[in-house]
Image 1 (cartoon, rainbow, N blue to C red):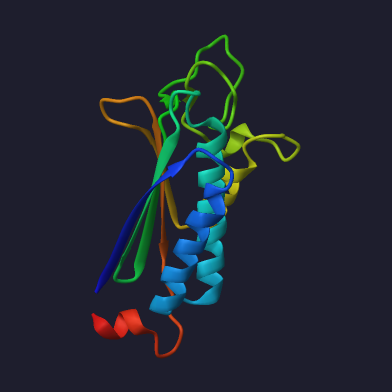
Image 2: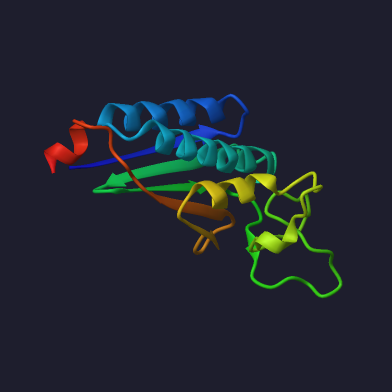
Length: 165
């Protein structure tokens, strides 16, 4: 059995806990291990917070969260309508992270770009630390960035989803 859902959310701070609660409820109902639930909920919260804060201008009022649980893997994608990522940094520009407030797109994040004392960019490090695989890309044919991440799931004893497969 697989579980899939997608939300279109307003770029408002109140949307972040809504997405987190839906993910937690889905995973808990399916029988995912509580530690895995926590890791994914924190990673999702960080990705949503970035979309809310940096995912567009006043004209773009929403972002999308999609979650797939298929077998022993959960994949989450957060898509916004912001400037997206630059594929290579401009030589004269200082390094940016996906959370910078630059008018131009930020380069695809790299762990070496945000020192421990940085004010921005820690959320991306959390996502990378709490998940198994992270991808950053621009939307195809439109403005916007996509942050997607996967995590291998562990199950509670007697969990519903693995038994239904």
